[in-house]
View 1 (cartoon, one colour):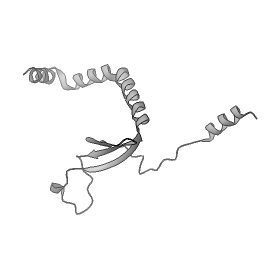
View 2: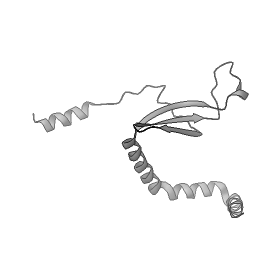
View 3: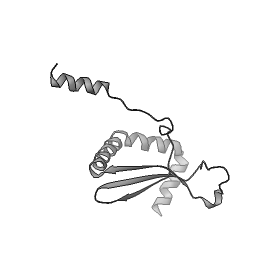
View 4: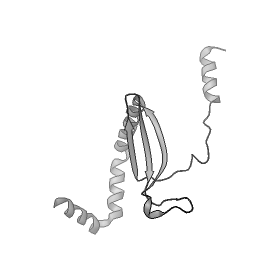
Length: 116
């Protein structure tokens, strides 16, 4: 078998293991970023609804960290490019759906407020 075939076969056999707890999709309200010359740390924070532990005092807690992710600068550039492609592909549809959901009355109110 040639090296090319072995490499292709090795790729086919690779897979990603999913931790069920980590695979839960959660909405976040805030993303905090901190960085240095080597990496960026993104902290995803959920303000509401809070899934507080038993006995926690809601009035003293502003939010909870859903997850933190560390990426390198090259990864950040690739994410930027991915987000740009997503916006270019779906941006007009998203704006149209948002305006449809607001309806004409709410939409005109938003326009009036932005003109002031």
